[in-house]
Length: 474
Ligand SMILES: [Zn+2]
Image (cartoon, rainbow, N blue to C red; front, side):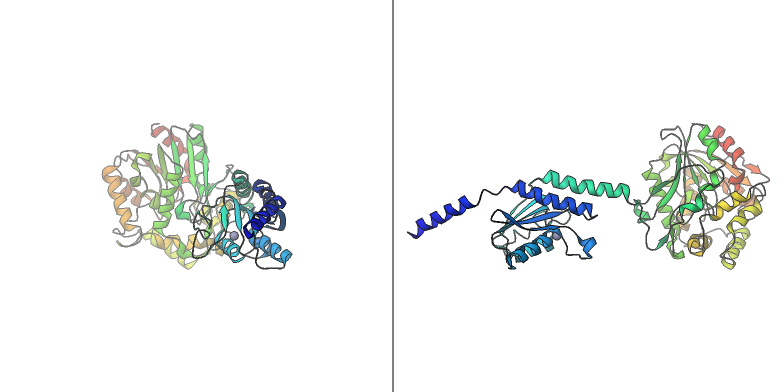
């Protein structure tokens, strides 16, 4: 008798309850997910169903609600428990578009829900089998049945589309808290600099800092000029040479070192080290997969740049070297450099535009001002303070050992062509320093001497670029 009654009861139950249409309820959860997306939240939605009836809905809302627990499932559980007047959700099924996290899985176990049905798997935080399996943990769960993969494609597509759109519309290079970014307006209408900016922030060494670079000319050009500036300049320094290289059909890549130009500027002077800047450049060259490179260097562009080719010699076929040095730490720094370093320490807020104007009477006021543009205030000038003392001075200074290795590379292993141009008026890294350097570069021909040019040789760069285009074979 009792058995029969049970069977009758079971039959009655089955008749009253249609076979649960998981897909239909998942569509309701998807509608909740879409509503979350419309509110700017990660699109996850959930519904709680009991006896074929929706008794609670929820959408992901942690941002809007200022509530880290406001996941779709928790919202839906709350609504359902309120509707039932009971914190236990016996006999209920939760439909959710994404595999629940540990928190939500825990909440559902507390609520004693009978069944959990989810759409897309979450390989990052899923706790229903992907990362953890709380429901499969016998010590925690004796009743909840889990099923995944219901409308998984639609659920996953909604998430993918949401994140893709956010990447496109949102800022792809958010500014780090410990860095500054010179406003774009500072760079508007600079004379002789018409090129579009390119940015990178996902090199490992950058840690999210945004690095700016110019990248002009065909990607498959027979030659790529990698133009490296120094302190306190930026890629603007190469504006007279770039058109010559492009007219020859070549590609030009000119990054702004971090702390300079349109690149982000760490707030702390101490963020800058030789090794870090070198690493950024190494990763930059690899990321852009630069080949057939003729590297143009001057000042810090050379201190750092001259240490690059030995790390990937097959990428480089030429060196155009202007007033610079190798910081090997076993040769005394020149008196001219020591005076410059002293000046920077004594007058850390020196006028950058005037520095350029002083040595280059041919430059317009607007051109000089373009060198001040990246540094609207003292806060943006950490690199200007950090770089002079960063030149390796002692054998164990940061960068000295790698610079000695580089010296050996240029003397003994360098297979490419070289060309040197010297700004004769440079009191810091002028003719004596450069002639000594030329002896360290295997196969370096007699330098081109520019009697009018000073330290920033590139401000007389047009004839140098023309000579270089002819000098370096393609
Ligand atoms: Zn969750």
